[in-house]
Amino acid sequence: MGPDGKPLGDIATEVLFENDRVKIWNLTVEPGESSEWHLHGRDYVTVIVESSGALESQFADGPGSESPNEVGNFTYHDSHRVHRVVNNTDKRYKNVLIELK
Image (cartoon, rainbow, N blue to C red):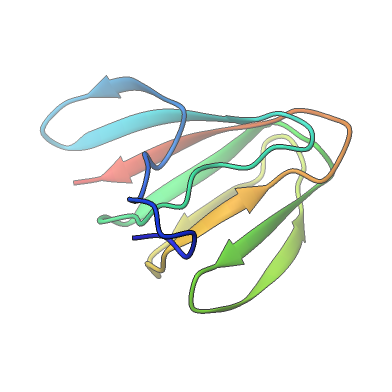
């Protein structure tokens, strides 16, 4: 359950590809919107394909953070906490998320 009392949602917007080794998602967060509260069950890599300038990460179990983003930046994630991302800018944010199976 998320901190809002609702079941956790999908980790991204749309599945682009899946096989026995990876699952590739597209995440789009429009200005003023947020992703669903979610939890990653696998390590993953994000690659920014459209930048909003900054994105806020909110965590169910503690303080969040804001991180700048630029197109082409990538990050490996191996820490798994219930969270969501919030786009508090006037530009759309998009990334490709690659789950490692």
